[in-house]
Image (cartoon, rainbow, N blue to C red; front, side):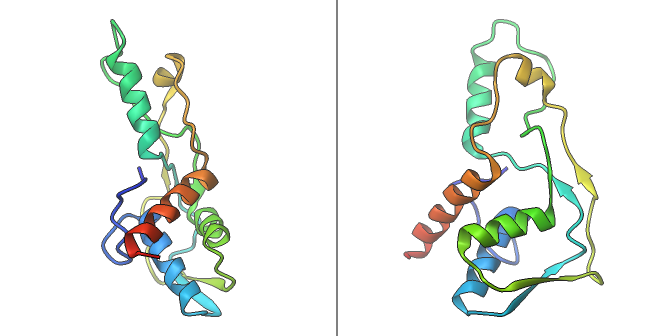
Length: 144
């Protein structure tokens, strides 16, 4: 999950806000390259906080909601794809180097969100629009 008011610490936050902070810093320093950990091949699912709030609202208004439910975007992207999309939104013109000596972590994290989808919910933020929203928030927090 990601979204406005996230913790954008390049060393102590989840991959999504950390990459925004790191790639923005690389842009501001006009670096020709930026190194990312691992191979870039692990797959992750990213859900905007506003989409989660909407799903919870739908559940709260159900007479008989499912007992157990996953709420996720419904598809995943590689860390490389995430980084490349952030790069485009941020405007970083350098290249990425993947340090394969560093760990990748779990190779795939994707939930089955079919129960919430059956209730009519679907996320509104695609990856690019979510990154744009988060990056705007990041810049506002920095005073840019």
